[in-house]
Image 1 (cartoon, rainbow, N blue to C red):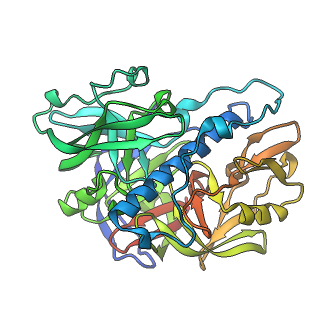
Image 2: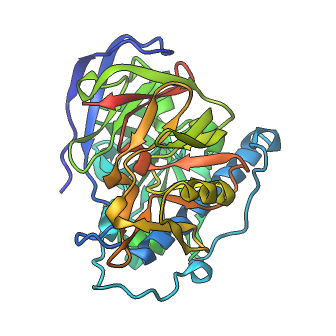
Length: 420
């Protein structure tokens, strides 16, 4: 069960390395999640993980299509390209026998919390996704069985809703789409309320969303990757003065998770936030990264995109192969999706990312995605080309669960701090 939205609270923000924010009025959005690729019994759900790979590839394929349309090819990273649509049937895992039947954890994949749309407000549970830039929820006009158990937006019940021209559409690898008309309405998240926010009440929904507990997605990335070509919710909140500071912070954990809008919640981290400037357009992307195993730096000088809407950490296949060579007993498990296994008895607890400052370590628990045999487990880092660039990694919540992460539009930067 998800916790209800928090009240607006006054928070004293700690000084940061690169951000002008010192204090501000912010809003807490508590939310929870269980691991979506590890069963309660500790086994790796291979099928679910491959579904995530397909969905993540197609999500960022669409982001690149939007970026090319909105900004141009000049905004692409070196080696970035729009890949063909990934299809689950082509990437379906081979029949690898496991010791016991997997439990379906499909309702617990992503980080979700409450929000409302309309006047009076209609309630929804949405994923807060730093890897996309649009808001969509199901419409009452969605007749698909995938919408049957979801909350649905009814424009006739909102005095502030307005239909606009155009269409919202994202295609997924199962041959289906998430699509619908374009509307504006009042949108509220934990007391942060904006007017005339563009969004889509979708009338078709992909099967990959159908079984999930959440209703839709609220994107928190830059306008440059917006499919709607409009200001995302948080940018609108800043421009309308609904938040004082154009900063938001994430704590992701098994419990006590929180999105903080309008600043950072200093009660959740210690010390100052180590900020790094965003490079490129559209994404929360920072450069100059390195990955270490203990004292050994195995790859360095690469770009990283921080994406709360993704569980897995992705790197270029050759770089990830090099990384796993530094882990004794590691071996390729699924060449199609890029998953590697390692001995469960020696899960690495010294894997860390750095951007020239602190080394931010991934805990053994967060690195381990579950068993595939009595002795082998799957690592959270997969070798997969998402089209984002030949030297670009995507860091999902398997990384973010280890740190407090701050995203600043004010200073165009991403920062990390140690969790309390």
